[in-house]
Image 1 (tube, one colour):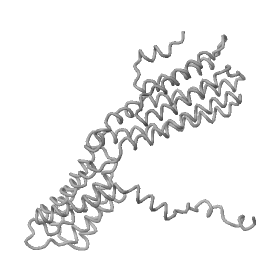
Image 2 (cartoon, rainbow, N blue to C red):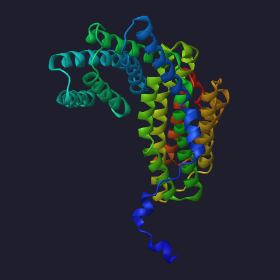
Image 3 (cartoon, one colour):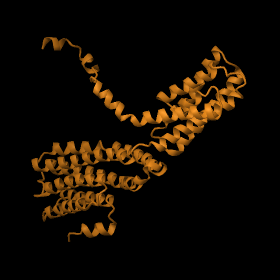
Length: 372
């Protein structure tokens, strides 16, 4: 124990988790799509520029393909096309600048600085910025061979071909659009079910602090919705643009169309947790059976998540959602308080939100949730 006390706390905090060889192999397996894109795009771009166009220094073709594939991951379609054009135009402008100022030591410094400044302004970073800086060095350092034509034109064409090759591989070897958005949705819905289960637990234990924990968890979910919206925009374009993912368009559309309903459901969960906390803090007993209604709603959220992932018909999820709302209404006492009435209302609202997300119409929802 004394030896442990002698270890500085700062050193303990900075200790990183050990990455095993198996972890690295798993990472390589996950990057198979990236490896395939890079290998085919770089080889294809170099072959076209060298053997079909006869360019003797076609190094910008594979370099541009790498920049587009690395920097273009996750970008919207318009931005991706702009990146392809931007890389080619950048090479053209850089080569024209080099032709004007010459090649040499200070020219390399100037071109690299300008490249990094422009990359920063247009949002290029990481490995893509490194590749752009490397390209600028090649522009300034590599002297075109004699009788190879206008270097500004040939290198512009090489960069454009490489960019197109990278774009083609992004479209022909796309990410799995459904899987990408499903991963985020499943996390979001599991957290939502957890918030509801904690609210039910607070009612059973008559413990306001548990409800406060549920409220904190519900508040922390909002950034997840914002991230999901960005993912939805990306996968929608993948499903629309890539022939390999056209079959996923309907399933992706189901996820995308449900995001607003998920947002509403999370907001309802926040209100439910807040009302549960207020009810318990003011010494009001939870109506008998209300905890069962909220717990039933949590199970309904889990079933809905499974149905959404499997592209099922949502019959079981809808039945469970309606049952949760029915139990909540039945649990209301004759003398309701504002808190108990609000809790029942939020259970019904959350059930309605997920029914909307399942594709039910307003009339269908009104009919299912009418318990008068």
